[in-house]
Amino acid sequence: MKKRSVTVKELDHAEFGRYGAFANLINPDAPHLGEEPIEFYRDMALLDLGGKPAALSTCRVCRRPLVVDVSEYHNGCGEALVPLDGDVLIHVAPASGGDAVPTDEMEVYRVPKGTAVVLRPGVWHHAPFALEQECVNVLIILPERTYAVDCHVERLSKKERVRIAGA
Image (tube, rainbow, N blue to C red):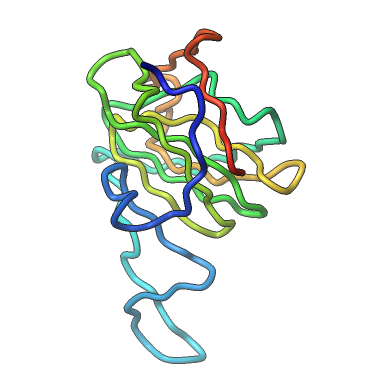
């Protein structure tokens, strides 16, 4: 039976690891080089771009109903996202090898602003949901033109849609 509702989870390295990685960029708690006034936090998360140049894009998301009605994946690369000015929710589901979104395995995570999330190739996802602010600007890092050449989008029927609970 397909999930109709999924509860928001906080990011946790062990639990989120099957989808990729994340790193708090604003208040890092990681190994670093140097001391105050200059500290360099290195290699906090790795993004596989398939050997292609990185393109930085902004996805501006405004508040909308907390219902997952579309999902996408990229075969040839991972994707990174960083909410710049507000917290967001993201949905993810494991790579499935086909065009059917595995809604029964879908999970939703709260991503605090300034936290980089790196998704592995094939992981189902789509535009984040603005949580508390009306609109949030999200930095997206993908290989150049991935949106045009490696973006497999599936719209969910009303019956397949997943409601986000506990936000």
